[in-house]
Image (tube, rainbow, N blue to C red; front, side, top):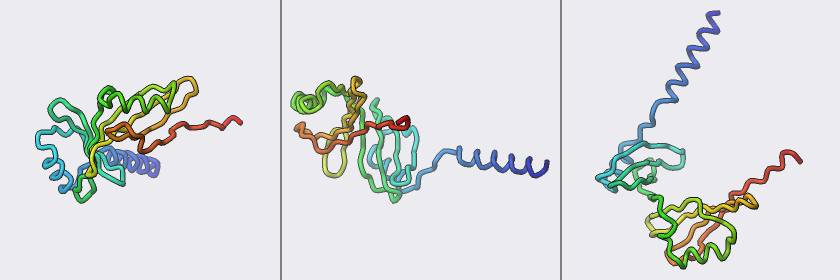
Length: 152
């Protein structure tokens, strides 16, 4: 009985340790304050390849990505698809007929600004993540559709 109680106590203690909020390294916090001095930080997250800071700045919600050493990688902000412009929208819908835009993000990094667009076709249950430049040229596309052949 003591062994079971000790095991349960150990599991509960370990669970409470993992449930604690992530505390980012000081260089990342400093870099965030320098990049967005008026931002209110909502939360930091470590995805093991980069640190992500979710924040609000003057009513705009976004996420900023940093290295553990505090080097800014990029920032992403949700945006209205109409901000892409007519040329970009025409390019997207010309190639992806019957798809609809589900989410759009403005992405800024050291090279400039691009746009990530998540599109979905409900008829064929297909989705893509595409990246376009300011002129509407498709830079990259990733097929996110998962084939479920578990019943075959």
